[in-house]
Image (cartoon, rainbow, N blue to C red; front, side):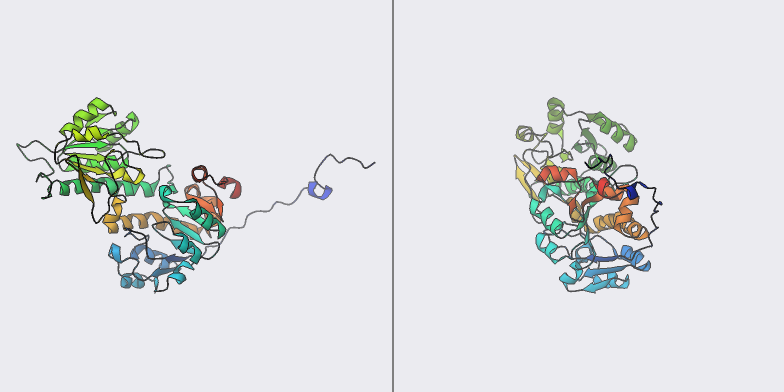
Length: 400
């Protein structure tokens, strides 16, 4: 009878081994491809010529498809002077080992990529399909999303700065719409001596709501902010350095404010879909010619009457109220948005190069690690896994 061994290890494995230390990686050279945005209404670009210059100065290569920066008013000449290589060949750009896009790539574009490419783009979870993740997974691609990149203080810089743009823009758009001749009141947005100031109601006290409030106050309007989180309202008051009307969302108070307001801004956020806080009946009670700007239309909109519109035909009239419900407001201010995205991504890119490639950069930087939703074709984001019913793994078990 064979003696039963008590250990699953062999004798050699149980002997003390010498410790193996990780060798510091040398700086790596990045080769970044920036294709032209093909998706509808997308006018931004990930890197400005200045950012390209700071990358090429450190010895990295950047290849840009001709005309990629035109809609953000950056010419190919500016990019080539900054040291980028310009090409007409789309396939060539998608052949780069690292890709930067604003919109997530289409399935056809994923087909053009080489296996094991690194892709940095937005993800826009609500518009994704399961096939998108499966296509990326087949190519063993490592994908990072701007929306998931975290800062050292735990905030999401890309989401924040685009919300700042959307919030500020919403008030400027409302000011334009209040003048319109076809159906407006010919009102000036502001506070003129002896005239009652413009009344603005803002739903949601997040970043977008805060910047909308800031802009409206700057123009002299009287602002009321509604949100269900007292903490957010308190933070808003502190950030604005002044006390304004704030309230939790209660039907009675909200209806009273909406009846009197000239402009209503929707900037709510929800876990899955944005909560609908203003019913159609409440919109019917609003003044004739009032303006609604629904920033949260990206995730469904918080006015029941909101319907998605485009940058070409941005408004519609319903119940005598002018609605502006364009998703992706920052795309209208493409240069500012491009500068903002570029300034957020460039430090991350330099960090990846400094650490010697994406693997070790993820290991050293938790914010970057949080941005990864596919690692060599393995889904590492639980929210996506649950949403699309795909198997997901914890990235900390793969990279450590």
